[in-house]
Image (cartoon, rainbow, N blue to C red):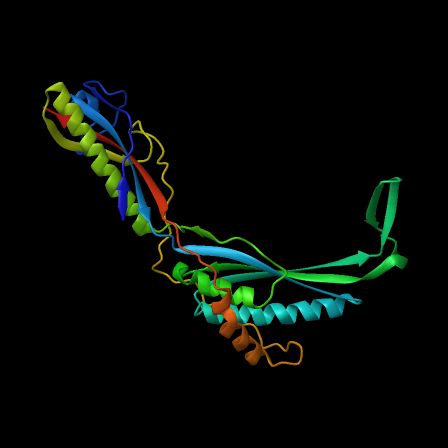
Length: 282
């Protein structure tokens, strides 16, 4: 894990422009009235590994009847989904969506001798059939297996495939690490300011997560804890594709996945935190 700290504003003020009670709950004297203080804003980025990746694939099939087109593409998509799950060792979230649309005969629309455009004749008597497409959106929960998982998806023969994207689902652990780094940054800035002014840095009087000044609404997004695993994904029923049993078709795709396993190296992700602190000075 790498840390990178960037500049933030800091100032010394014997009369800080806010009022808030201090550590003693019964003491209503604002912090700024108890003596000189330093307000230091800390900001930090930490680099962590991506914990998710995603991509999508689309399958299409056309038939004269919409029911036939739908059944055919759903069978193919179901086998592909099972192969993807197997390649991912079930460390995956999948969403599949079906779209069915009609397609028609094409006719020429002539604007000039050299300018001819093909358009669909959308009248009912020109209907040729239906195109059914299933788009499968895949989120890989173990990014190191992205190449193998996408290889299984490509081995199933999709009509189109989207690019791989690596990203970070926020966790409480990552947020705490960034928060701790921001506090360290704020302390270093307060120490530098005290040294420059000839003062001695005293105790920490207040710390607030978020943007300064040190009274306001916190701005840091709350992280999601990974301590509770996501619910298990339902396994779709077995399907039959082109006369082949669903199980054997899935295994054939899994066996061919290595051939289609394009490189997919996880990229580092950044987590940001900001804090505002107030230190006493002597």
